[in-house]
Image 1 (tube, rainbow, N blue to C red):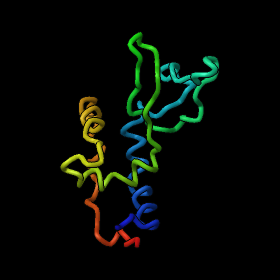
Image 2: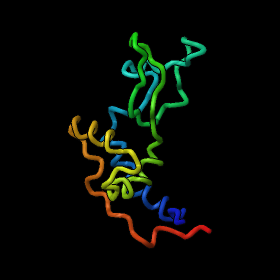
Image 3: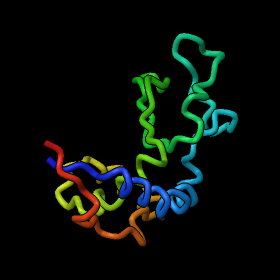
Image 4: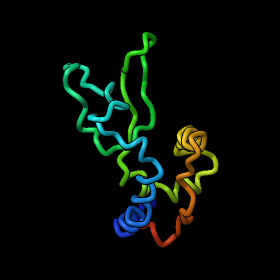
Amino acid sequence: MANLSGTAKQARITAYKDGLKSKLAHRLIDTKNVAFADLIADKNPNKPMSSLNGEIILERDLAEDGSLKGVVSVNPDALASMLPDIKADTTDKMGWKKHLDKFQAEGVNILTGVADPQPGEFEVVT
């Protein structure tokens, strides 16, 4: 089994995080922004989910009545570290195709300028 080395992960974050945040600025959660006003705690509807601030919203899970059941988001560091692997995942084993398609429909290609994964980035874990 091979895992991404810590050094490679940090290098990816450094290389891709700012561009990613710029491209997806409209999806960066800020619960003070009206676009994210629906992100409230389920047990306390007066309390925004401020713990999600700075995350990238991927999708809202809505109930039949249109109310929010949940939200799917990702930390920009985590997504930045995965970008080369997502780019190389032509069979969608990682499950990012639906999100990439949504971004593309918005005119955003988060994989532009992303290098292919390199074998030296991984360490063997036994």
